[in-house]
Length: 145
Image 1 (cartoon, rainbow, N blue to C red):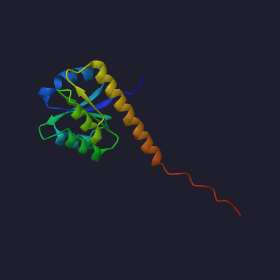
Image 2: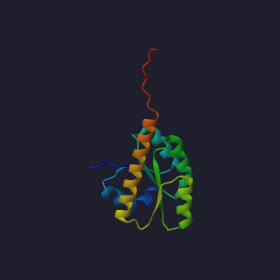
Image 3: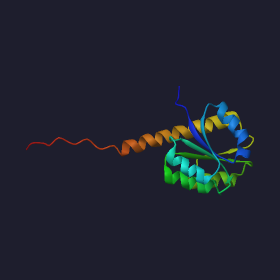
Image 4: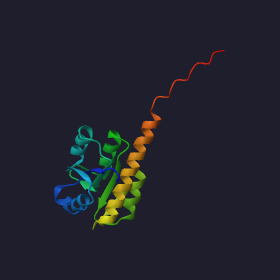
């Protein structure tokens, strides 16, 4: 059984209900946050998440500002942006800026599950690679000569 996915949902309360139902039915452990400033505080104090799921617009910023906050906090968290419209320009912009993917309303249960599973796996692999690259190298034995 794969490890449980931990995600932060950054979305105004009045917008999150449809996605919240889908995420909870997928068994994803959620940290609910309303805006960029709260996300910034939570990223520094809560147990780590693998994925941040955000709305395009937030009360104190947008997905770009949140992506900057996530990158500053930890480079191994994937960001998924949610949109009311399937806009190819948004999708391209999200990918070019370093986001992982875009989910479009109405949210399809299987698409949400698959997207977050793959994003969480990528986060985990990046964390492992970073840990391996920063592990001290064993000392070599001196050769007598």
